[in-house]
Length: 282
Image (tube, rainbow, N blue to C red; front, side, top):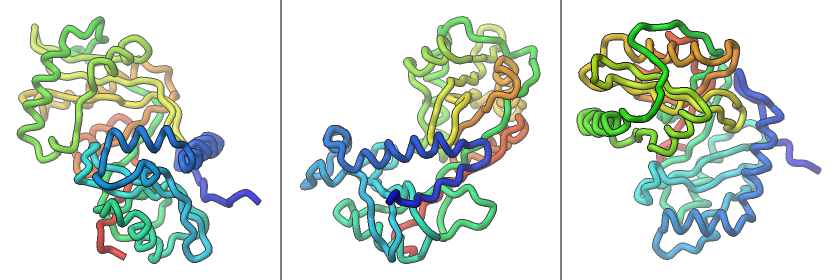
């Protein structure tokens, strides 16, 4: 009998797409190449690759699909993703998950929650997923990117921002290859002032679990130009170039209030939240 996984899609999500995504996650329980590759990229001393495989736990008569993760790829910051489950969430689950991955000493358990009700456990917000339908307006200072001649300026400005922002250690810029894909298969708009680069917004058609649409790959404004509404202008200018009614989505750090406000002004809203349950919280 098939396992009755809870697959309620969030707003703008698709149940068939979630089912396909879940099948892939379940296959990683027995995928040796996945485990070996993961272990090679995030090696923890004394552990075999098998420890990196996804697992299906039986807890109080319910099934939990779980897998080890590392925040930012840092082996010193392990956590466990509660990927899917059956039944209604119970307090005991968190303890059981922590015990199953005790060899990694995980700092937290992470789960997604999209229902209108309060999440089942006390936790800290990791990320919000904002989604909405494409709609935008033109802005005189925003224009489509014709090339990536501004990439070095963007990289330098991002590095500067990372050294001054509390979010810096947890946020990474899009690399050159990602932006090349956006330029070729998606869309990029940039803002300039004379010859000076001020910011960009870029998107690419992506599928991730419940969502398929234009994922915001990058939205950045140089430090000295922040506070002028340029982030909103960039995002609206980007959305104006998309087919109206297409889904636009992307994740935003839980502490990045400015980007959350920008997304809301551009017609996107939080439809899903990733929560961290810190170690020691039942």
